[in-house]
Length: 306
Image 1 (cartoon, rainbow, N blue to C red):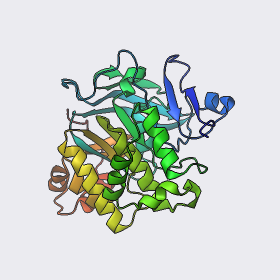
Image 2: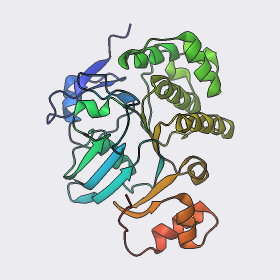
Image 3: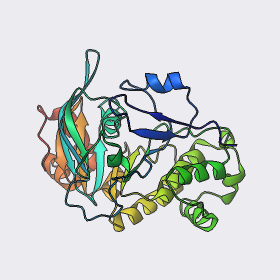
């Protein structure tokens, strides 16, 4: 029985914004999540709603546009006057050390975190409007699906919330692409390894099929063979013209997948451009070395390019 799932309003500022989370929360827990810093260990997607933009609509607006975004927790500055633009159909990598503000930026994009200043739009729609999220799917870094569900129940739940039908043939094909055995469908999530759980989450977001994929450390916990399989799946998304917005500490993956990157350091951007441009700027052949040079030796943040 899937009766423990709860839909709740993320933000009291937006009375119509309902997110569907695949983990049980009490009403009190849901209320405390509004506007504060919380961990959201589930896939988040918005249901199609009246006025939502159609999938694959002709995109004249950027997939993501951030202007003057500022976020603080008490006296701690996490993001300071951040500007960013990601074109529709781009493959974008957000780079930064732990604590740089990457996950907070993503939470602000999804309206899971109240911002202190600035504007965010998704495909031209203000991010605090429910219809802005109808074209995206999000996989958080600490992905923890409900432990009491089987793999099949979890995928069926995610597809139902996305307004899609569970197609066994399609599901098994996606699992095979990610090198995940079909037997995982009958196992409880609590019995899965970290890598298997991560691939189950990736299978869910790929099956949902949205225009914008927001993936926070999507290859965390994966072995080399699984990383290759996941990169192949993400390259297929890019080839289809979908927008990829992801974070990773594995910069070789970023080089392979991304046509644009931004380096976030202590709440401000140090660089915005292509991986090759960052290497050229610092006279390095390796993106890893160029990244380290950027955050350790650049004296001042730079304004991101449009």
